[in-house]
Image 1 (tube, rainbow, N blue to C red):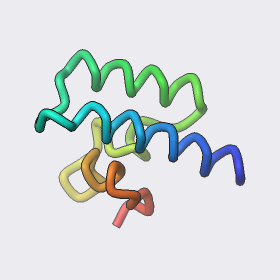
Image 2 (cartoon, rainbow, N blue to C red; image 1 turned 135 degrees about the vertical axis):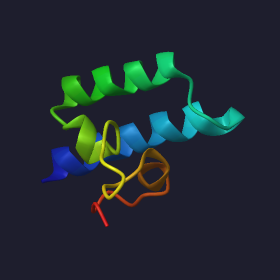
Image 3 (spheres, one colour; image 1 turned 45 degrees about the horizontal axis):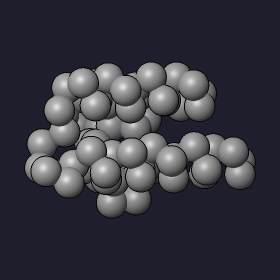
Length: 68
């Protein structure tokens, strides 16, 4: 459980840094997806490639990773 929280924290930091200039560039989104893979986090759980009803990348950056 602690590893999962740490993984999400690292991803939230990556997203927050990437969105400093507004929209996250595609190349940085790809790197975040790669980071998700390395950490064992599903990209959809991180708001990447999610349906319109799922969590979004900006929610993740704000600390909302519960999918609501």
